[in-house]
Image 1 (cartoon, rainbow, N blue to C red):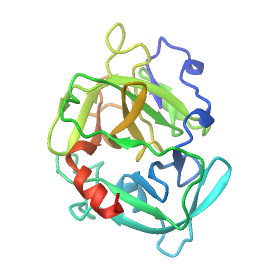
Image 2: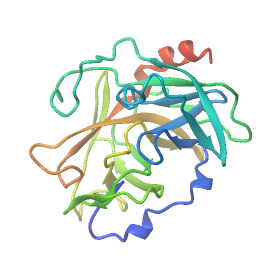
Image 3: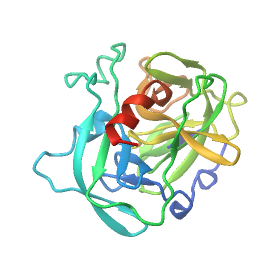
Amino acid sequence: MIIRHDRLDRETLVDSTQWPGITSFFRGHGAASLIAPTWLLTAAHVVNLIPPDLHLSVEFAGKRYPIARIIRHPDFRKEWDYEKDRAVDTIDLAVVELEMPVEGIEPFKLYEQSDEQGQEITLLGAGECGNGKRGALGSDRHLRRVTNQIDAVDDYWIQFRFDPPPLGTYLEGVGGNGDSGGPALIERNSQFFIAGVSSWQQLGDRPLGTYGCIEHYSRVSCFVDWIRSTCNL
C-alpha cells in the first residue's frame, strides 16, 4: 500500500492477526478475502497467474488450506491487459473454493447497497509500499492499511483518486503491485463489508502509486447475485 508523503510508514502497519480474513496467494503478492468458510473473493487477473498444474494453498491463522477450484466471472475477458486496455470494461472478479473450511475466522460480508459514492473506504494489502511523491518503493510483505474516499461508481467499478495533501483522508493511499485482489472495506455499525476488489490504476503517464492516479476496484454490489449463486451462499 502506498501512502501520502507527509505520513510515517509505521502509521499504516497493522497486525495481520487483527485482519485474519485476508490472505495471499504468492506470499504477499495477490490478495484474497474470506467470504465463507470455504470461499475466497479475489480478482480474476490474479488467479490467472496461478499455474494450472500447481497445487496451491493459502494460509489463515498459521494453517494451510489447499485450493479446490477457481471460478472466474464469465464476463471476465481473458485477453484483457489492464496495463494497456484500461478503458475496456471487464468483470475482474473470481471466487476460489477451498478443500476444507477455514476454522475460527469470521468471513467478511458483502456490501449490497448502491450508496458507495462519497464514502470512506479502508484498503488493506501486503504488496508494494511507498509514498505519493515517489510511488512504489518495494515490498517487505507486511500488511498495511490506508484509506481513501470513493469519487465515482459505475456498473463495473468504484473509483478514487490519490489526492496530495492537504486534500484526501488522514491515511490517504492506493495499492501497489501485489495488492490486486485485496478488499476495499466500508464500515457499518462497527462491521466491515467488502465493497470492492482491487483491480487496476489509471496512471495518465504517471508512475504507479503517485499522486493523481485513479484506482479502480471491481464494484461488489453489482455482482452480489453472481457471487452468492456461484458459492451457494
